[in-house]
Structures are given as structure tokens and as C-alpha cells.
Length: 216
Image (tube, helix red, strand yellow):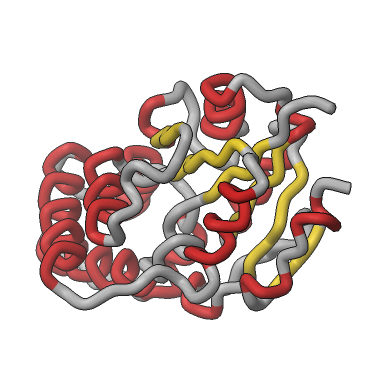
């Protein structure tokens, strides 16, 4: 049997961080002189920072550079992660433990910058758990392109068709399917209105995941 792998998105899957992202992104726009609603940011869930802010900069005609915007935004997010109380999404620790027990390769493929990924995983004492970590900013194209998931499979030494992905965002599901992987769509109510209809399975609770069913 080919080696099998389980790949995690991070935001909205490992940590319920979309409320942080929405709040800080709105605060960031206000800092630069614009009022933007949470709903206006929902379409960007799952995308990388550079891609999102390049689009926002074009739409609103921001005079500041994308790098300046991200520098302000990212500093605020990391400060929140380091100083406020957070726990992983319910059921994630036990899911990872079961995957480890069954000797599956596990990877994390997130659109977030590596510095934010490492801040979250350090906070949860999970930094050494994953067999590979890939940021969407480290590949040519972010989600919904498949690059981040294809790179994770490559680093794990597994065929993409032997991977199952856990995602909460429309762009992430599209990326997983474009990579030729099976995908679980996790309906996180805090991730906004996300169309997960492309996913092979849709769940509302991590307890609904059956590894026997996924890898049958």
C-alpha cells in the first residue's frame, strides 16, 4: 500500500483564528483610513496575505505598499496570539494523536506566513508534531492554486492521491481538489459564509472524522 498522509490547513482548523483575522484586518484598514466590513473580507479566507492585500490595495486605491500593510497587520496578530488565551479547536489534539498512532504522515499547509504559523504552533506546543510545514507564501501560487498542497505531498514523499486534506475555506477546498487530493470540509461558523460543496465530506465536528472511512 502506498504511504498515506493527512494534511491540515491551520486557520479555522487547528486554531479558531478567523475572528482574529477579520478583526485585525478591519483594524488595519481603519489604521490606513478606510472602513471595511467583515463580510467584505470573507471572500479572502484561505488566501495568502500578499495576494489578499494586493487585491484590497487595488480595490480601495491604498497609497501604502502591500509590505507596509502586512507589517502592521502581522505584528498585531502575533501580539494577540502570544498574549491572549487560546486553545486548539476541539478534537484536533485527539485526531492528531490517532493519526500518529496509526503511523500516517501528517503535514500542515497554511496560507499564513511562516512566522504566524510558528507563533500559533509554539503557543499550542505543536511545533514539532508535523512531519512538514508549508506556508502558502513559500510556493509560487497561494490557494486556491494547488501549489501548497503539492509541495507538502512532495516533502512527505507521498503521492497526492494518497492524501486527505482538512479545510474550512472555499479557496482551500479548491486547492486540495486541484491537487488531486480528497478533502474534508469543516464547517466552522467563525470562518464566514464558505462554500465547501467541492469537498468529499462535510463535517461540523472533528469527532465526525473516521480514518477507516477516509483511507478505505
